Image 1 (cartoon, rainbow, N blue to C red):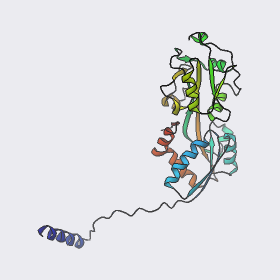
Image 2 (image 1 turned 180 degrees about the horizontal axis):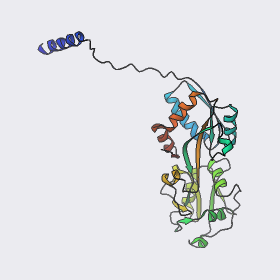
Image 3 (image 1 turned 30 degrees about the vertical axis):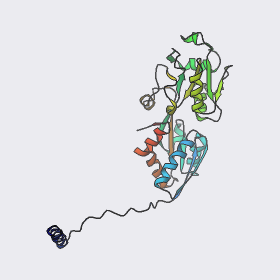
Image 4 (image 1 turned 60 degrees about the horizontal axis):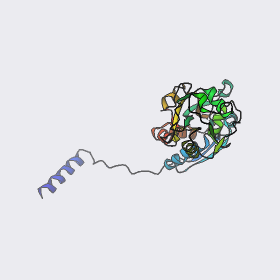
Amino acid sequence: MKKILSLLILAFFLAACGKQPSIPPTPTEDTLTGKLTFAGSTTMQPLVAKLGDEFRLIHPHVTLDIAAGGSAVGIKAIHDGTTDIGMASRALSSDEALGNKPVQGCYRFLAIIVHPDNPVTKLTLAQLEDIYMGKLTNWQSLGGPDLVIIPVQRETSSGSRGAFDELVLQKQTATAANLVTSVTAGDEAANVASKAGAIGYVGFGNMDNTTKVISINGILPTQKTARDNSYPLIRPLTFMTGPLSQPLAQTFIDFALSVQGQKDIQDLGWVPVK
């Protein structure tokens, strides 16, 4: 009884002083609405789609239309004002950057992998090109065992295949006689892990202990060497906006650069900028 009386006296005192007990605010439903359009890099399209799923958990009334077409398409669409966010997986020329606000969202690198028992630990970019063009065919010529080299590549629609052909093969198509083609990154890693003479390429998210990563031009692929651009097989992935982009576009980019967005990017197998 004394305890109840004390509480009543305290409540009366607080009321007399004009102070009310604090009440937690009632959660309000997200009111952000609108439609965002994207165009550009086919490499970035699946990443942006996944980020979009996470973005819409926070902003369920926003719809996203994510088209691709290539980096050049995204750059032109921003210049023409026909899309809200352009996507580019290469550096922009000075002309392309005019009237364009690029924001780097993450990096993509290709790790070169071999069978874990292969003693070779490093290659040059030129040697890697020669392997896939069929000019180097035996590991013995590279300091390894007397073993036929089996180059593994991705199928033509793969963004990794496009990056490899551009960065390593100078936009050529590999012509090695015993090429093996894998549909997914997981298939590629499994092919390399199961063939003693195999060599292949995977992204950050598919590096594991079933294969061995080797250095290219003396540099191993890590988040640090991706960010400082010292690793040669890397592509910056960039969001672009222009004068006619909706303010909503910046909200999406801010999410991509947030702690949550960058964690999602890393979980999806890409290298975050932060």
